[in-house]
Image (cartoon, rainbow, N blue to C red):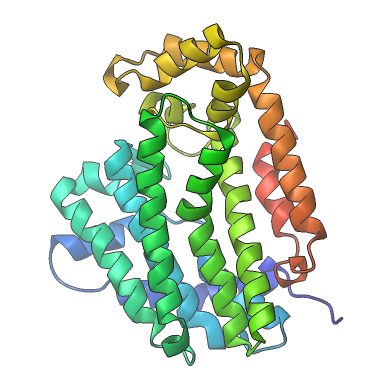
Length: 321
């Protein structure tokens, strides 16, 4: 097999055209378009924007065939982030005020909705747009369902790793899955290869969500604080693991803290919850699960499509991995 293109290779070629396309997509008059530009100005890795082209290139196709597909996925993803901040009450996104805190809740809802619909429309600009638009729309529905499942999980008295995984495969896995699928379709691959890469993308999304859960507890997510998931009442994988495996008294206390209203959750309570996650072995179990997922993904026959990505995802947690 020929030498595969790295993320740096594909980014050096397409990052600027993708950014230009994203900016062009959100141009317009009024407060909503000002807020759209504001949100994009916060930056981000643009990984989902690059994946379709990255996959296509490593399957031997011209990566520019999938450029508009990447723009489509990135617009959808950013729309979900705006809505996510509204629903979770997060005031900071990537080190600056979130859209809803800067422009108000009504405009944030407009911004998020606009981006998701605009993303679906943008996909039709690609050569294979007609073949993938249904896949992207179904992915958007799965993301929304995943977000709803996350709220169901927050209210559950018996959260478990299995229920968390069902949520994560939808909320985070769906867009990665469709991004890999798009790249394979743009490269004219067989249905078997398209489905294989799509499944790989969903598993990668699960890996990303677990990394994100741990980064919130052990690293820096750019929100100006740590363990904000506990404050928000989210059932992250470590919390789900502890709820299912810890001693009843420890599990009950942890869930009492997580279920407490955000305004009533002090930093002392957050620190107590972190101590419980360490004492019960939930942090160690979560890190072990992350390593196993990384190993499985790295050994997969489809890893060649995005070489080096697993190590890159693990890098922010290198101090504990």
